[in-house]
Amino acid sequence: MTGSAVGRIVGVGRALGGRIVTNGDLEGVLDTTDDWISTRTGIKARHFVAEGENAATLAVEASRKAIEHAGVDGGSVDLVICGTSTAPESMPSVACLVGEEIGAPGAGAMDLAAACAGFSYAAAVASSMLHSGAAGRVLLIGADAMSTIVDPGDRSTAVLFGDGAGAVVLDAGDGDSGFVDHILGADGSGAALGRAGHPGDHEKLFQNGREVFKFAVKILPEMVEKLLSRNGLSPEEVQYVIPHQANARIIRSAIRKMEIPEDRVVINLDRFGNTSAA
Image (cartoon, rainbow, N blue to C red; front, side, top):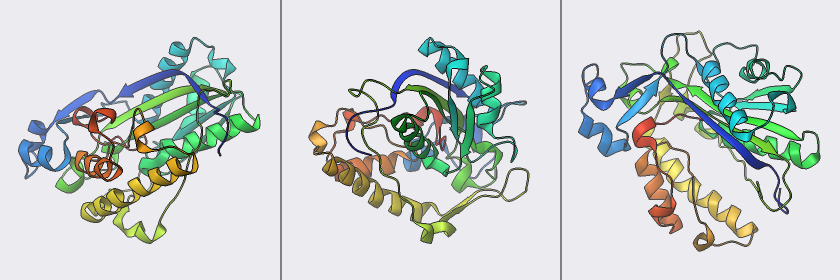
């Protein structure tokens, strides 16, 4: 999608798991140290869901805040899209539960599972629906409770992830602000590098961190360069980059390749960890 902008953000909201887990807390249960985690990931703390919380409850909280911030009625939402890979149950969808809770039970609702790329994929769908006129207002959510699928005894994954949700209210806009373009891609040949079971089973998340790092540092600059090129833009014209918060070393390695100064890049994983689609 290129051309005029569509999908103007008019409201934002967030939610975090109720338990703050520091690197010091993990030192007591894992063969690790604060220095080891910080040096390799940039993460100092993360939020885990408390009792009674899950990806759906976080999504609802973030959505309510986004709607309040937008100053709109929940019933005006035409479509709810939630990027999540940790829904507490296979059905109903998290988006459907959110629709009911915000007072939009008749709105279209769908979950989209694309792991850490979930919010980006959901944003592409949302902007396309607005562009086509199929929806006039979309509630877009990224929500994951990664602590529910991580093996707490696996140092390679337990230190990385956190739980949270982010939501935005999108209107069609006026063509001057919003989403201008997006690129989607996947490489199924790397499926063995990261896997997790369905909700409720006992297969925890596995990740080959070394290979994922190599892939991310390579593909992120390539996709950004392609996106900028086809829109006639240069890295110097980019005011802010908001990357997926996977690992500080990944982000810094990628932006060096793109020749984008770090003061134009948002990095907040030191406080929240990798919250996947959120």
